[in-house]
Length: 223
Image (cartoon, rainbow, N blue to C red; front, top):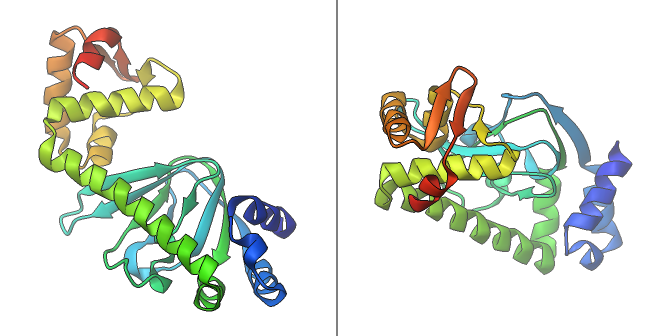
């Protein structure tokens, strides 16, 4: 499993060939492949620091958690994506608590935080890569904030349903109203009210199995 993780690191990290033998050996000694079950918490804000993660299979969700327990999804990560926010303890510019959960059964390659920090401190290529990835992550964060602050809720919900359809390849989004609200950082009652409006407009049908989009043209007009 460790060799499998090392090979994935070689393919995923553009700085790999810029490492010294000692740096490469340090990272290789601290590579692990970990499996997580659907719904399992992987990283809990400032209370944990896993290190740099590469998603080998499955999907992860990064989110913020308010004092009242409301979740705001920042972005999702899929096969081949790299998560740097899970190494917040070694990245000075991450000053807020981010949570990471497995959205489905997932397998993740992890480079331990202390080993990554040691190599980042000695190798400018690794440091540049880390901060480039932070910049990309903040771009995703700002997109989520922009949606919440400036986009009407009907458009946000239409966007959410459309993205879920693209991800699954199905015209049915198999999520409860509670789950949709959690992913969107809203209240279940608000989601239910807007979905009823979508039903009246002939955009979706609701069932216990989820939300079925029945008129894609109407949905796209809201995007």
